[in-house]
Every structure is written in C-alpha cells, then in structure tokens.
Image (cartoon, rainbow, N blue to C red; front, side, top):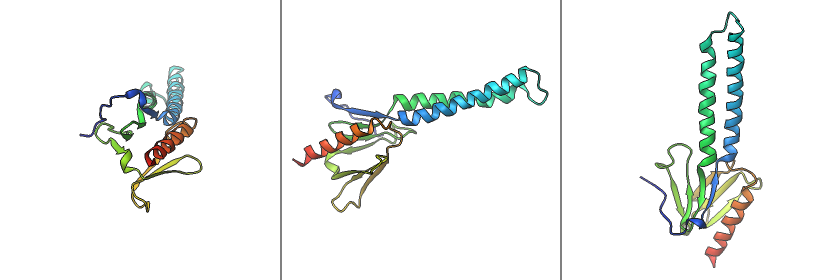
Length: 157
C-alpha cells in the first residue's frame, strides 16, 4: 500500500489543497439545500402534489456535497516535499498515492493559463505525468510554478 513517507523536516513542504474544487461543491450543495427548503415549504403549506419525503433526496445530496467540499478544502492534492512531489487523488488517496522523486523529473512545463502541469521523465518528453491544476485555487498557482521551477533549477546545479 502506498503511503506518504515520514520526512525529517515537515516544515519544508508546500501543500496545495483542492480548495478550488471545494467551491464548486459547496455552491451545488447550497442549491440542493435551497431545493430542499422550497419543496419542504411547499409541502408544509399544504400543496396536494408534494409529500414530506420528496424533499429528502435534496437534503441528502446537500449533506453529501457539503462533506465532499470540506474534504477537498482540508486534504492535499499536491505536496512538494524534500523527497519529491506527492500527488493525492480524490478517491482513496492512501491507496492510489503517487510519489514522484525529484531525481525522476527532468522538466516541468505549465501551460499559459496555469491549468495543466506536465512532468517529464526523459529528455525527449515522451514519458511523464499530466496534472490538471483546476482543483487548486488560482491565487496559489504562481506559488506552485515558482516552487517547482526553483526546485528543478536547484537540481540542475
């Protein structure tokens, strides 16, 4: 089972969460909760075609999306450590963790809008990983870019 390795200096790591993705989930949760209230109030006012249980799926959906939003905001997506880059997927992160050591990375290329990151493992750029950065808040992306570029420049020396 893949798991993050213990490092001697945890204060030297940079953690990027899925807070950008969390915003979308919380908005959808709020809309779902509004539908719950709308249907619940319609039933409470005595509308003949609505029953009390019709609002429950929206309440359950709202609670589930709020929980996912909290999870995305608290847990890491990418962690830059002295060992390398740890990439955590949304589903089963302990099982599907991907640790890429700095020695493996030859080059890191960001697109112009900072929405994707390509980590290349060889000189001809035929092997590597493509990461979507849409889950990370846009204000944090320049920090990620600067940290990766400076770490790779330090490695080349």
